[in-house]
Image (tube, rainbow, N blue to C red):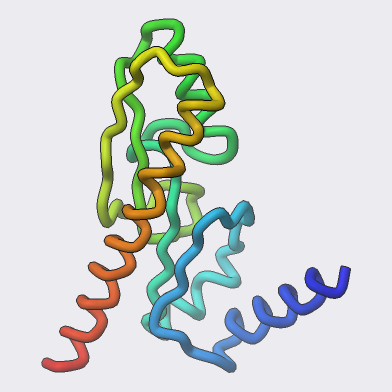
Length: 141
């Protein structure tokens, strides 16, 4: 409970502009931000990026890996993937920064989850570096 209170206070201070980070990176964050939280950050030029275990436009929201697995097993899709994207008020619909396709080789769900998570670690680091470089380059102009 104490952590939830601290989290709410932090969200409130970020949302009302008391603090201004350059970049917020969400990885494993299962919380949908409200427009009233996102708008002040956007106006302040704060970039927010998210890691999502699906390709753009596929399996938005929770349980993406499970839903992809069911489609793979049924033969309706042949691959899945991951992306890092900018956060907007539509869940997992922000502009992709970087994507990576991941082949399915008949693995069971648990193994597919492990495989996807192993790729996510590198992807979020690369996406963070891309966005951080853009922020720094913009300042240097």
